[in-house]
Image 1: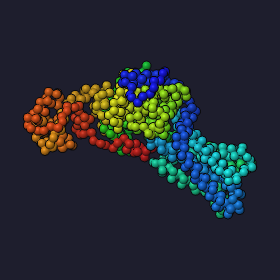
Image 2: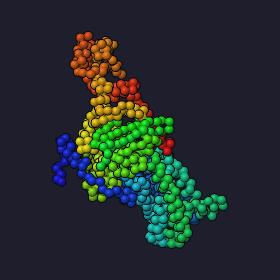
Image 3: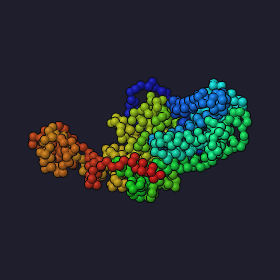
Image 4: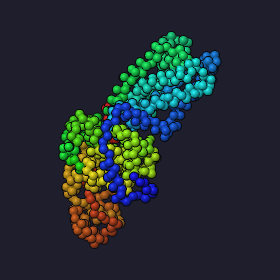
Length: 283
Length: 329
């Protein structure tokens, strides 16, 4: 097809009508998109949004960066004797924290979507029903990876030298992202139950904030009162932080990793179907 | 082959809380026709369309769309229809091109096909220059055109258009009308919801008038207008003080006179132009100063007045129903 030079003038109505008629008639119906392809397409949609508004990544990286700097230099010496020693303990933990905080935004983004008309179109397409949700979370996983990478790079700049090297760090990152994928289903469920994106954000942080602080992310639990220590040790976030420390230092316990993976699987098994059902029924 | 009826609905009911948004709607839409569903805000148009497009489950009643049950065979229905919703059903945070590629991929086109199809549609809908811009920066008319383009990425057998021109300026509205006419001429079945009688009149072969969730009249645009009287003489006076005098004259000449909210305007139903001309001449002879007069089609208000005895008042909008439903969900 030759492309004439584009002008701002409107084409003649007859030409326009012919183009429309051709556009209407020219596409035969292809076979239905596979579940995987539909989900990946929604993941691509998530990536495009980051591409258009990269600033949205600032939301999820600035807070953890502040935490790293603040905790390391203000509290580090007091907690661990020296800032360097604290960084070794704290950095894998803050990686967990920053990625888990990011999961709240998955719920916020879904809730925002629902206020727009585009969800109607998605729901009227002949696609695998959970595809929009699975795809969005796959896209979000890339964001989790970005948030995690920022923390690791910052840690290295500040002097963090994990003994398991690059492969250990990658393994820890992967484990954290898998757990985050499971956890984010909780927030997508929340995203479908709450009325506004702000409400999702508030409720989400109200849950994730105390859970993160009541873990071993910041301090060794053996200084805590015994009841609290028991809670902290049972907190899956503690297990995840311990496992990622282990992976980075090269002494991870297989049991911890198994618990993390099982928790992620359980969260997905419960909340993914719930989210899908709510997504379908909510108008 | 499909049956001659593209849509057969009987007794559709949908309740949100205590509101019966749709209260027993029957529809029969022939394949290849443009069918208008006409009614004021909150009459139940959007809820009806959302049930037929499989987005909502009816509480009772049933419907077949292109031969498939909307509940039991929802996926089959989704594979054949497309929906252009009242809120533009496009992604504001993506560009126009990305929106079309996205829909193409979701419908099963391979990436190169989806891209080629997007370019073709952008050209046909006059959006080529804005293809790379984010949709949130589009004008209302451009957004609407993109929305319709997204509905035909794969040619649907049936299109649902929910108030496609509400909120558009006259020029954009005409563009959308031209698009719909082209589709209709090509044989696509279209279900068109609208609050504008002239829109239904311009585009539809058949019209159902809906009020309080019920179909209250059905027929061709001609039949519907005939049931109301073919039109009305609208007169605007130079001096509002003279309206009582003008009302007297017009009542004598034409019968029932309707006083408009504008204190200088009034209208009277009137079947033919000769009598209207006579009435205007009579006003002039009575020294009533006329600023403007016109012989127009009956408005939706007049249709409603004639059919229901009450004007098409603003009722809780469909959005309000949606939020009721959220509570229920």
